[in-house]
Amino acid sequence: MSALQQGLSVSAMSAQAPDKTDPLRHLDFTGSCRELSRPRREARRLRCVPGTWDRYLGSNPPEQLNPFIRWVFAQAGLHAAGYRSAVLQRRLSSCLRALRASGVEEARAILERDPSRLNVAINALLVGVTEFFRDPVVFDDLRRIISSLARGGRLRIWSAACAQGQELYSLALMLAELNLLSGSDLLGTDCRADAIAWACRGEYARLEIRSIRPVLREKWFIPVKERPERVRVATDLRRYTRWQVDDLLRGVQPGPWDLICWRNHAIYLAPETTRAVWRRLVRELRPGGLLLTGRAEGPDRALPLTRVAGCIYRKR
Image (cartoon, rainbow, N blue to C red; front, side):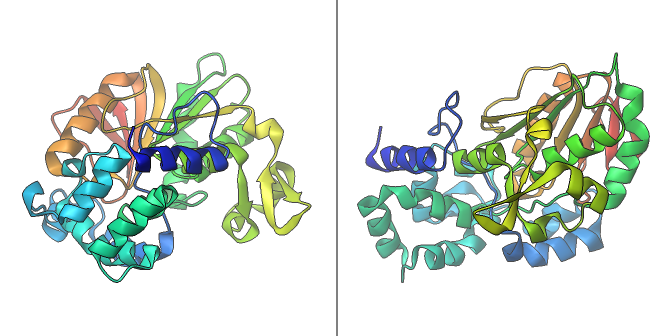
């Protein structure tokens, strides 16, 4: 184990990572949503036009990637080749700013001196967007369809690359409204240990839950006494969720799943990596199960899927 990985372990444990996970396995692509405003605007404009994001983001050969980025990924146990190198190159300046370094040499020295800051570097390089009930139309479509999946009131749902857990909690809230939560199994996985620790705590800023209907906010969110600007997901909702540190690029959670959510991650991966992940996810869906994607993403047409709504596919 490298010194940097040891530092990563200390950082993850200080974030109260779940005891049953290995905080050194992998990190993830998620981070501050404010830093991704341009791709968000592009996602709205381009929607799900096949191949459009490939042309927009581009894909450079791995050997053209900055050596510092490759080094950071190696220290974190990630493979930079799985991501679009053009995306990572654009994030380098943000990484340097996050580390308060004037250049890559100083940034590497900082990380070697203080391995606990490896999370800072990874989060700056791999940015994602997450929020409660993101894309409300998608959740409206899912609300109409998901009841047909229930078998005896029990659903198995997996949110892959779940970030800090907002998506999975949104799904739990929706199931509670539909009286489908009891007995259901909701799993969230993410490569970043501190993101999973955050999701386990279920603590968020009040501003983050403003998109949730007042009746749900009042029922399922409890004020944090010591931090009045924050709220925590009620225990009665959290107990239906479980969380695990896992790297989607190395493997998938065994099914069969009734619903798999993989949204707004594929656009940052190399095309061959994306195709492989789609195949693995569909393989773990039960027949009739649903795959939920991002607006600017879509699985290969050769897969046994039928589109039933804008971003929802059913396995044949």
